[in-house]
Length: 330
Image 1 (tube, helix red, strand yellow):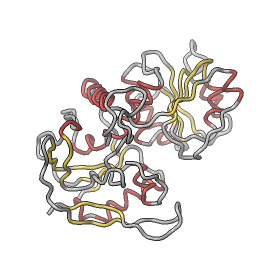
Image 2 (spheres, one colour):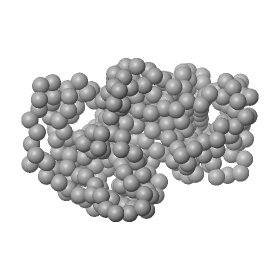
Image 3 (cartoon, rainbow, N blue to C red):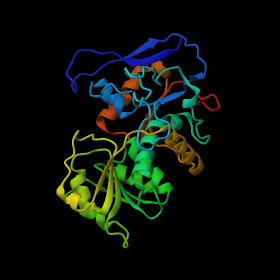
């Protein structure tokens, strides 16, 4: 029987509780018409998995219910991610997953299993934020990506540099800023330093006095900062709020005609477009660390969550479920 890793609910206060991991045996599922069973070789963790273990994530649910509408999901039930929540009990940290064949996309051939596992959620989120929402994934544009080191921020950096944009980054880690520069970032600053915003503007090309867009996953005071960093009519794309669930919109941002655009995952079409771009540009998602030993290595899997809790990772955290078979896994 195939195995799967899940979390076990225990009593506790949201944010303070820590749901333990459990390995379960799963029944063999016979695919229905238009379904396929996929043998998993790798799966990646996302911040939502950390929030789920802390009882900090709502009961939302890889990308069904949203075909091609650029504004949002067509399905009245909303958008569903694979991930074992109550809206979609199917997860990817398992030996075998059975899903509709229409939800499959062939992994770019230049990627390893670990890199392919690192791509879907972060890649789609970054694609919608940078391409669909910002409208600035173009040559010559100056873009700020905050909180470099996380999976989405790194994919945003890779997408926009591949498109010819000048990308700058922020982090509290000088090491992460230097790593980002080696990946193509034009510059970066430590946001914990006094006057970091002025320092950042001084790094822009001579013919650019302000940024065209900010891709942000932190929230907090980004709108206030953005009013100083962005050109009039510039755009802030928010795909998350790790600092706070609220962001005050200031009058200075109004007077600058700053656009704030929320961004989630994306449509099935956006996913296909993103995978095609990755394949054509030979982009490789950044993997911070991979744990081997399969689903039996519970201690190793738990250690990846500790990396995420401490914020020490640079890129995706991946579990190797099985050795590569030398052929496409999707």
